[in-house]
Length: 382
Ligand code: PLP
Image (cartoon, rainbow, N blue to C red; front, side, top):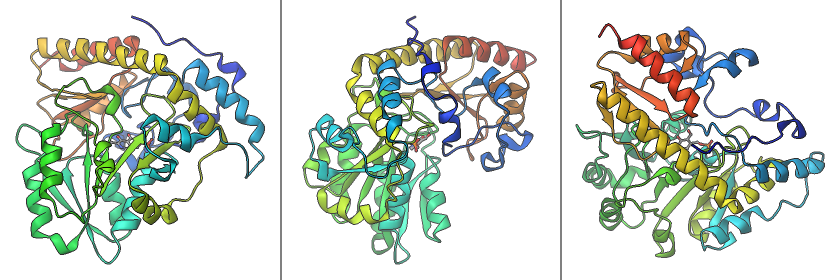
């Protein structure tokens, strides 16, 4: 298997990425399995020796070209106004859109917060599935807005007819719909026909935010990005991130794509706190398609291998189109996560009501060997 080339990190300013905190925190404390917000930051030597399979990160790190571009941008560290490498134009061009269709965020999480702030005013509600990536609901709760959560179907698919019903019966109260495609934590997709069904069926003035953080890891021919709907003039916002395929989670860069009108509505709520270095890294990442292809291939190969091994052991795995998967361990995952942690493997957290499903990120080949060894040890008695 091809390893992504190790970049000479000594030439990069060491430790910077660890100082720019990501949204989720590392799961170290005993309570980690229960409540990720109570997680205690690790000592760096503990952190380095763990197999890090809990935050759906890219284990290979940024490519050589991205590291070079970021290193070159350090000369702007003392500036407010500086050349930014043309990041907005590069994103627009990448998607065949215009710069007016792009809004940057310090990670795509910022765009989710911006959407809440823009569309949930006047006691409006967000509609989405449950479980999904919880930040939108958390941001909504923080601003005293409510969420209408539609449970997943018994086979863990997202219930698009259920979303439509929820929107129609609460029409006057709905601020926007949030969909994660592929979904986190399950890793499965909403087929393109169902996205169309939703957009055709929903009242035309209800914005739909489609979070495509894991877009690059999809293989299914039933999947399609929702970006073309923006060009059709629909009230669609697509969010993407540099945290996954480009391995820049610690550097914080994501973006939203939408019509000029929607971007204008949302942009007053974005705080513009993206650093100079990652803007240059983002431009280089978009250009380095070979590195992205290598990451994708490594992840897909390993996802298939490990999920195959778990299935062979008699455990069912939800078919995943992301850089993580969920395995049904047939017991509550909270103590299981702690057992993994004792063996130097971070996995999890718990995603109620799927309390017997363990979410595992696809790490390096070595990390996955450690995961499988720990898995066999923990479940040997069973
Ligand atoms: N959306 C989904 C579905 C995610 O899983 C994540 C992070 O794991 C994010 C958005 C946030 O990513 P970031 O803020 O790093 O771009």
